[in-house]
Image 1 (tube, rainbow, N blue to C red):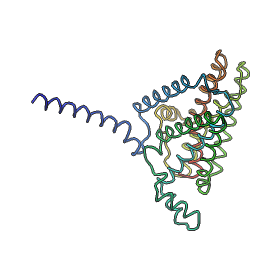
Image 2 (tube, helix red, strand yellow):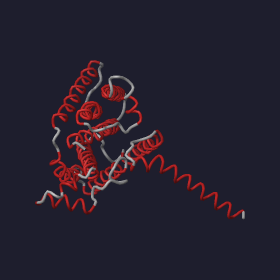
Image 3 (cartoon, one colour):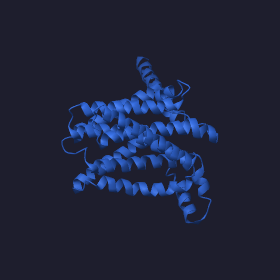
Image 4 (cartoon, rainbow, N blue to C red):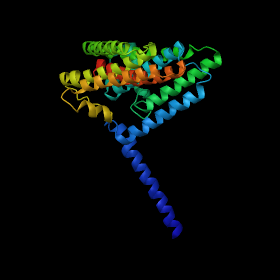
Length: 308
C-alpha cells in the first residue's frame, strides 16, 4: 500500500508539472494569447544564461566586434523574422490560397503547404524559431571557423534567407504604413544619436545599431497597433507583458512605448560607451541589444506589409 501511495504521489507531482507547463508555456503558444509573467521570466533567464555561456566559450577564440560576426547576425535575424512571418501567412491560410493560383509559383506554395514547412508549431513560432535560428547561426560560425572562412555565417544566412524573402514578397502591399514605421525609427534614432553625442558618448557603429534596433521595434509596434490596426480593422495586440503595460498606461498608447524603447537603448549604449570593456565584449552586448530590437521590429514590419 505504501509503495502504491508513493507511486501515486509521484504521478500527481508529474501531472502538476505538466499542468504548469501547459498553462504557462504550451497553451499560450497555441491559443495565440502572447506571453505571461511566468514564461517571460523563464525565457529571459534562459536567454541571459545562453548569451553568457556563448561569451564564456567563445570570447578567447572569436572576435564579436568583427564585421563578419555582424553580417552573420544580420543575415540570421532576417532569416528568423521572414520565416516567422511566413508561418503567420500559413496560419492565416494565405499560403494555401496562393497555392491555388496556378503556375510555377502556385506549385511552389502548394509544395510548401503540403509538406507543412511553415506550419504553426513549437519550432516555427516564438520563442522556438529563434532557438532554431540561434543554433543554426552558432553552427555556421563553427563551420566557418573550421574552414577558416569567417564570412561563412553571413553567406549561409543570406543564402537561406533569400528564398524565404522571395516567397514572402508577393504578399507585401501595405508599403505606406511600412514607410511610416521606418521614418519614425529613423527620426527617433537620429534624435538619440544627437543627444548621446552631446553627452559625450562614443557612438560607434555597434552603439548606433543597438539604439536603431530598439527604435525600429518601438516604431513598428506603435504603427501596427495604434495606426494600422484601427484603420485596417485588424485586432493587433502586444504579446509581451511589460510592453503591453507601457502601451496601455497612458493616452499616448504605444507612442510611449516607442519613446521608452529609444530612451532605454540610449541609456544602455551610453553606459557601455563609458565602461572600460574590451571591444569584442562591448560589441557582443550591443549586438544582443540590437537583435532584441531588430528581430521583433522587422517581424512586425513584415507582418504589417503582408497584412496578416
